[in-house]
Image 1 (cartoon, one colour):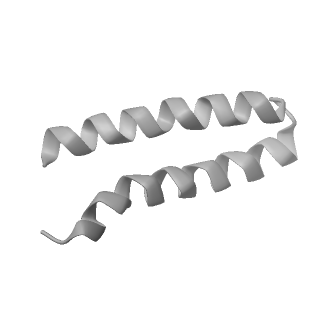
Image 2 (tube, rainbow, N blue to C red):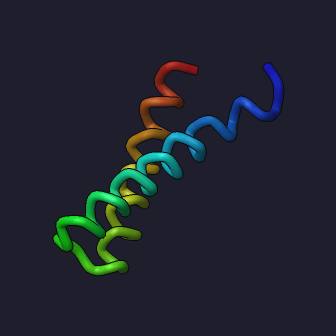
Length: 54
C-alpha cells in the first residue's frame, strides 16, 4: 500500500466540508465554528470506518 492511501479519509472529509459549507451558505443553519465542529466529527467517523476496512 502506498503512503498516499492514508490521505483518502482526509479527502473524503474535505469533500464533505465543501458540500456542508455550500449547503450551510444557502440555508444558514450553522455558524462557521459549528460547521468546523461537525466536520471534525465527520472526519472522526470517516477515520473509524476507514480503520475498520483497512
